Amino acid sequence: MLRHIRQRLGWKIFISYLLVITVGIIVLAASTEFSIPTAFDRHLAVMMPMMGDSAGMGMMGNSANDYLESDLFTSFRSAVNEALTRAALAAFIAALAASWFVSRQVVTPIQEMMAASQHIAEGHYDERVRVPGNPAEADELAQLAISFNRMAEKLAQTEHMRRQLIGDISHELRTPLTTIKGSMEGLIDGVLPPTAETFQDIHREAERLQKLVADLQELSRVEALALGREKGGAYALERLPLDLPALIESVARRLRPQFDEKGVKLELDLAEGLPGILADRDRIAQVLINLMGNALQYTPAGGAVRVRCSLHQGHNHPRLAAETRRSAAKHWLLVTVEDTGIGIPAEHLPHVFDRFYRVDKSRSRAGGGSGIGLTISKHLVEAHGGRIWAESAGRDQGSRFTFTLPVTEA
Image (cartoon, rainbow, N blue to C red; front, side, top):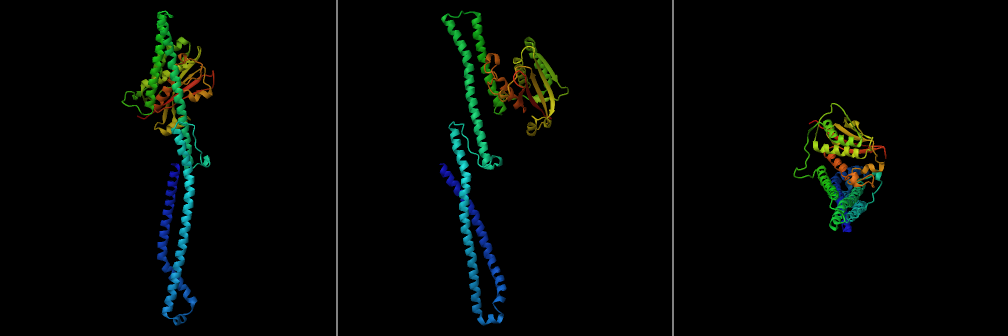
């Protein structure tokens, strides 16, 4: 099949070259046919004085003179046509060689990409293609190869995340189900006493299972929302005028008893005179609860969590320059949740928003949440046209989560 495609493309290139050459030859021949008589007459007028005076020419007779002129014109035309024929033959050979060379240069990378795409379609996501030429001076085919390899890399990452997601979900479902099954078998066999404490343990594991299923359903919805694939409007963003500092204060009041109970100080640093935004109040509140609750969870007693909100111009902030170019918004509200907790090592920062990702692999899910809260927050912020990122100086150096929301003129 690939050989057939290569031959077909080679013939197409050859025919295209041949068509261009044929048109050029036709135009050249037509122009030559019209210009030969004039050129011949001009050339003969120059040559006549060199052949003798008019008396000498007259002695030859008009018939001989006409014959000589006709023979000279025929020879001149034959010479021009012979030159055109040789030029056409040379152009034909050149077109054949050029089309063969170009078809090899074009078809070989495409042939490799077709073979690689077939391997990827069969599930071999580690397949890559060779980038022709110098990557620093990539032409269209090299750019296509680079894009193909980037696509293959993304597919490989997606497949890895899918397998990891299946494994994580299986593990998370197995733990409470095993506990519930063991407790029920103990009750049936009479090994466990039917006390309120036993039933409370079973109920607690069922709640964990229910929360995990709810988190997965929530994640599926926000991913569909962020991709614009939500149908039916049941989960569409309800963008209304929102006073973001007031919302932060409201969320802080709800969570302050938990901070006080753990002995973690909660501080608010909200700039005055901030403009309102168009956003979904409940979804932004969900983002704030996730970030502040996450900071509380990983900050030991005696630590502090600070929430800041300020206004920034997009072109003056390094992380907002790209968003400003893509968006009509020129100003952005930045919300930062900073803690003095356990911190995040540098190698884990790019993955903290991945599903089920945990920095401390030894930490149990019961003590570390479902691992979906940050993923949900990321999708909700991006659905509002904003961006979220994490920063940390390292382990035991605290962490800082920042998200942005555009300020629209409307």
